[in-house]
Length: 124
Image (cartoon, rainbow, N blue to C red; front, side, top):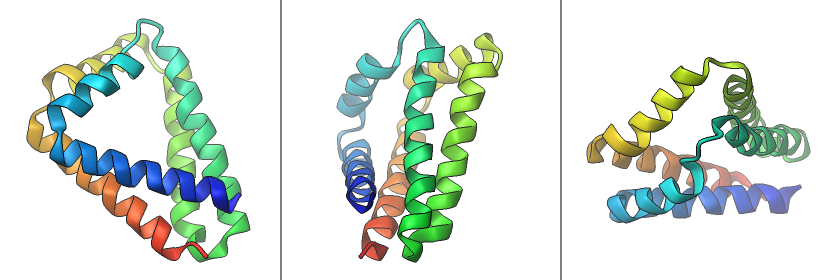
């Protein structure tokens, strides 16, 4: 389980760095993977990440609260993608991939990077 937490932390660090340094290119790659017509299929990713983070919170107690809170947020996001209004979900993904400014994307890249660093620095 700790290996899965390391993988998630490294994935967040790399994604954060790419969003900060190569904003347009990274958004194009993410758009190819996650901007799909069947938006409800996207729910599987946050649900899997949420389950891994919640399970990891109980295995690795050094990051219990961080992992638990992030896991619960990911699960809630996945559930929202499943049961939320389709027009609202499509509007959210449209905004993120098409209309969000570079500053907003870089800010989220910085937040993702910091969370990844916080996780990886507390894992043992």
